Length: 194
Image (cartoon, rainbow, N blue to C red; front, side, top):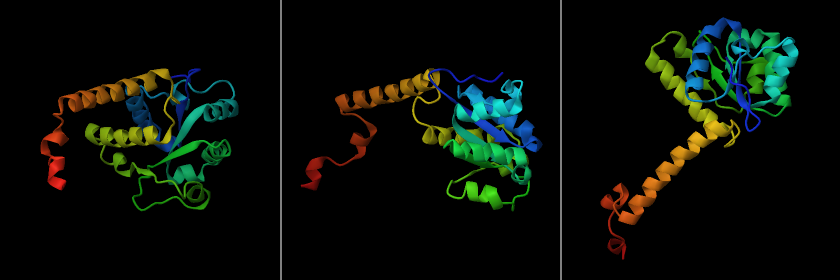
């Protein structure tokens, strides 16, 4: 079931064509395992009215992750989703996922993402090993973290990130107090520069 957007945060909306739904669903599950709230239509995101559900998903998103293929480009529904996301000034995270390794987005889609670096997911369609899926999802998670404002995905995700960062800072602070950090061990003493 989809993680609903909380009052404190938003979600990452997945926009994709039905031809790659199974592959996108695997990515959805990986991001959920990392406590990233994701909206996906087939995971409880759709309500009675298609257009209302889609527009609310876009409006309540912190970013829209679009899994683009040649079929995505030719789909009027995918085009509406992506252009509406742009109209709402949502951040876009394009993931290239076409089975043709030479295909690149053109026309309206090429223009929509012209200045955004995409993540290349194409080899995921032929190399479906768990290691490759993990590597691709790690890239996506890093992009989400760079793209989305801290705290935008809700208190749970933000608190986990804050705890990790706080722990790392505590380790650094302790090293500085002990003057035994790895860097201090291997850097020349400042008197060598006099």
